[in-house]
Amino acid sequence: MKKIILTSLAVFLIGIIALDAESFRIEEKEEIRKTLTFQDPSKPKELFVDNIWGSIEVEGYRGKEVKLLVHKTIKGRNKEKIQKAKEEVELEITEEGNTIDIYVDGPFRDCNKRRRWRNWRNPGYQVHYDFELKVPHKTDLYLKTINSGDIKINNVEGEFEVKNVNGRIEMSEVAGAGDAHTVNGKVKVLFSRNPESDCSFRTVNGDLEITFRPNLSADLLLKTFNGNAYTDFSVSYMPLKKSVSKRYKGKYVYKSNRFFGVRTGKGGPEIKFDTLNGDILIGKKK
Image (tube, rainbow, N blue to C red; front, side):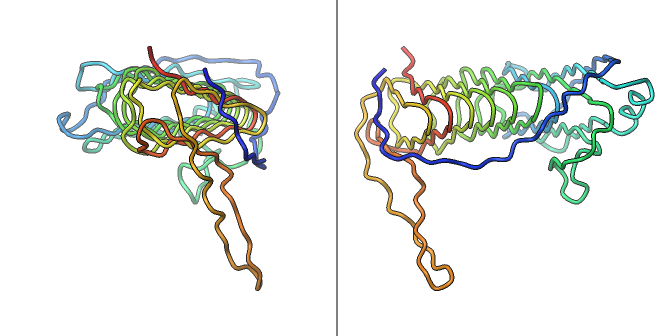
């Protein structure tokens, strides 16, 4: 790979959820199996999975339904905490039109703003959901988890929004465009077809390893602080974008996005690569 010389750097302040190191004495395990359906499989389809503790694995296949397997593990300090977890945490599954929504709900959610994590006192238990899903090849994916699990996608085509905090993101033989962001972990993506619209790949502590098909034509925006950027593609350097000015208390404040741009081919969609502590590797599938 050729090394890309970066001339601009940036430092980010981030908030990371602190994990309780308490050990739990009791565990209970359960398997959940369901077959979920889209109303009209011939039209665009959406799958949402919003998790807190645990992994998410999605595999594309030739079928029309979503096949769901969930490995549920409840960890608690004692039997009373296990029972409390059963009462307070639930897995909500909705099938509405061509949208399937899988949502882990509990007291750790913001009561006023659904789907947001909030800080709350340790209740003496954790409920882990490890999801395995088979979906039709062409399905838009919106996947989120926070702790104790990676997100993996294989052989799916469509828009994607993938978010993790303490875990990796791995996507293999995917087509489409979207965002793949984590905080503590590597982001690794292999495209089966180059994206035709904008994408964003981001982590704080980890490498970005993104592999495209040989005919990539795009504008690549790169940013890393403790790391380097490498590519298999021939690139030309793009001029830095001008700083954006704002007037604040009678003064002008100039802010730069700090990305460094290169172009491969004739240019095209804007693809961002952003890491703080890690390398950027832009590969070419041979």
